[in-house]
Length: 326
Image (cartoon, rainbow, N blue to C red; front, side, top):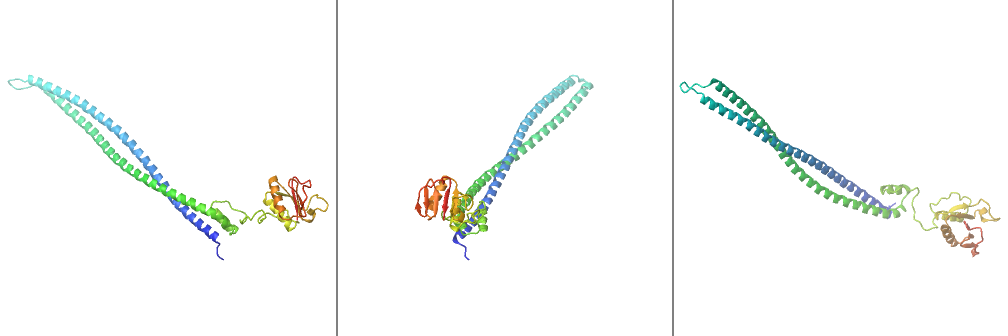
């Protein structure tokens, strides 16, 4: 048996929807990955910038300290040089012109000052070299950080471009999902009329709809009572049972069938009459619909009464319910 065209069309729509959803999900994964990478790189560049700023402050401090060490060292060295010059002058002044001998005490004092001068100079050079090495190391680190910041900026720029591109792809994928879902929903109802309960609910699950308890069939107007419950209608003839189900379909409640107290000889006792009640608008609609079906009796005081095809007007006692008999 061939598959009805409406069902084939729906199945095609659902396959297209599934394909579009997979494409959308892949596009969404790409967007989420792009955003994650962009977030990581932004966090990384912030970290590198903070480190660069720390190094810049450290470099400034080291240069300032280097200047202080140099100034302090130069001051001390100048003092040694001045002392040495003074001692040399004193030694020269104390030299015996005949023997050329000098004051040994001054000579010893000069050697002591020169030795101390050399020690201080070596210590100063060590301190200056250590600080220069630290400055050079910090500068090298900053150079690397500048390069890293530049490279990361380039990566962020590329990632923004990729994210923008992937967002456009995602928007198109979402539009295709929306279009496919709309097509499937439009074709669902005519297809459901041709499908059984299991196939109907399978298709509805694919579309995110709630399942149904019975197969869906076309509504051919109030008189089509397929799927309407027969509960409580036992003992009624087929035409009267049909009328009761029409009432239920219109939202009315069956209030009396073959039981209860009725006038002697009432059609209720023979299963040919039913009483229904509910909203006044629904009762009026039910009365007008039944009036066209050639009932044996039809009573509803607000609209009148019919007996054996003759309009007899309101008979009283039927303002809160409709009585119909076939």
